[in-house]
Length: 146
Image (cartoon, rainbow, N blue to C red):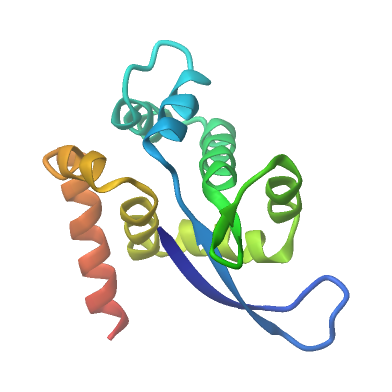
């Protein structure tokens, strides 16, 4: 599970508030997610295809789909996801702020990706050159921020 804390001002609020966001994908949800994309056999192949494609619209559509599919709300001891929760989040100032962080901070992208994936899936991805490149970018961005 990936959690992320944001300080964001709502559409109708005068004061910013702090919100904790929750994201996770089960192995079954990953298969369902992949199935939505034609001719893709694995999650890694899908990410590679999207990042190598220079089409910004497709990239944004993919990010919205990935983030929306993994977003849920904590309700007691349960992690709840459904279309109402997903659409409410994707149309919120919290998503706008989170999306901006994904676009500007490679370390957030890496933490998000690592956090939403089941451990057995992450192990297979860690050997991928694109993953290693992203990890290096995240490290560099972290050092530059100091």
